[in-house]
Image (cartoon, rainbow, N blue to C red):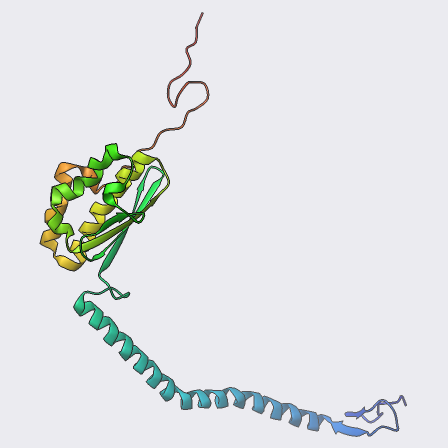
Length: 226
């Protein structure tokens, strides 16, 4: 007989040597062990589920309290016309060629600034009248209750000027639509559209790149057939 095994059928002898403690486990004992193990595994999820059921009322109570606070906060902001940040503010982003202008319009005292400078100091001075067009068309009284802050970068001087004027116009229209009334917004929009459509509508035109075989995008070099 080899060490660690028994000749009796159905009996397994555990232990590498005869000196160690030996235990004999029959097949019936193995089946009983497996049955208990299966019962333990089947009971474990139920116990976990019971614990979850015990904690569920507490979790639901906490969730209800948090939700009630959030709903009260949001309802207060909606009735007073405030944004989630606590101020009446609208922002628009304008792309003119490769220039980008972002305008922030909020309730204020009529301050208009471009990159931190007053509107009158924006270069070039030759195109100042283009920047002043929204104010001249709508009147300063419509701008007296708002502050508009514009950030512009990229592109050339002309593209930046056109991006700024469009950003100012669209920011004011968006603010009136959100926080004033629809009639005032429609009146402002009609005035701007009748004077110059580009005050509110972007210009998607771009310069077409040059191709080979000619001096420009479409023109071809002259050639002789004879």
